[in-house]
Image (tube, rainbow over all chains, first blue to last red; front, top):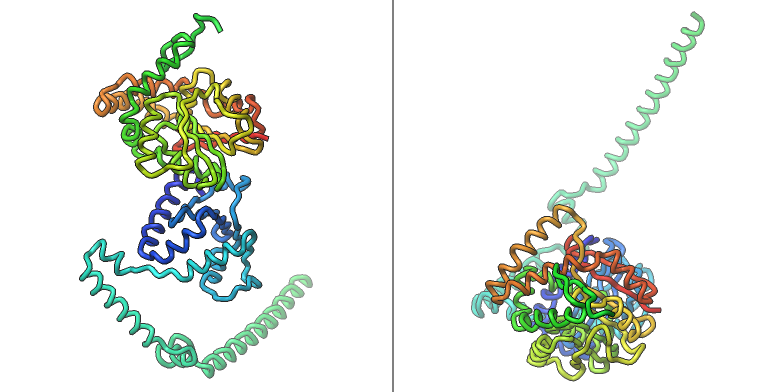
Length: 216
Length: 249
């Protein structure tokens, strides 16, 4: 991924700073992380290919992006996770404990992984507080209220799953109706038959021409 | 070793016994402004080189780590966090001024408990054999008079399976970069040294000592000759700096 290890270090440093700065606004999670201090996990992604080591140091996380050169290293962690990025994101949000069918492989200290996963799921970042540092308390409060109101409006205006089909077809005409689709399918089938007939007639004429040439 | 045997001190030839005194003089002079000069000279990139070194160490809670020529303690601070209360980090440096600056800096930052300070010569490390899980030496090996002796000393005190990490200036892998680097080293660095630390000569020595240091492959062979089972190196910033990693079986 990186030819120069210093570049990987620069990226991991940036990510680490961003993550820890965000964590500052969830003191509860930071306290829970303290209990896992010293533990580490290596995440090996296959799509895209990357390897990242996360170490818990006190109330903060230390990140290291490992280059291809390091992958055969005997680096150890308390737990190892392997899988595709999209599968990991899905699993992280999914409440079930079962790994079956997820495409993810975890081995090592499973108690630690469960505790760490719970901390991540229960993250409660005080975004208003974070914004207040940049734009001031009253402005941050007003902005967050607007964001919450917009979010609520969007959620309410989106159709329920049961009416989604009707919405897509009749409201926004994004998909054809069933009748239209059946009609279209029949027309395609007729066209295919016509092409087959034409191909057969063409090969008869072709054969006749070859026969005439041979005789002459 | 005869009294008249010579070695290099930068581009100058000096008696072998005198080299360490010359090097000591340089570091006594630069100690107070060492950190700010590192940032200025490398535009802060030295932090990335050191970060990669830490990432390559695989240090875990409970480990014993030796940071040789640890100077002002950049690596030791991070190792102290990684080894935790059950581990131990020793910051060793031959130069008392550098060691004092490092110790004061780390104590002021709250790194106490698992960090210890030892004034020691890398050629004769005063530790028991098979003791450390990891040994690092960052930008210090090129100042050592007898590098082979130092490498053998490090090998002795490393645990089987332990790793040695040598972070050091090396040979740029690109001719164009090498020319730019030479111009920067011999013209700009001494000027920065003069303006910031009022010491152009020490920074001229820095540039010269880098040119006298073995290149990547030569150093790799030296590490293997000292007894290490495996040695691989990673070029950074076009080969201006390289990290050599040796494993003891």
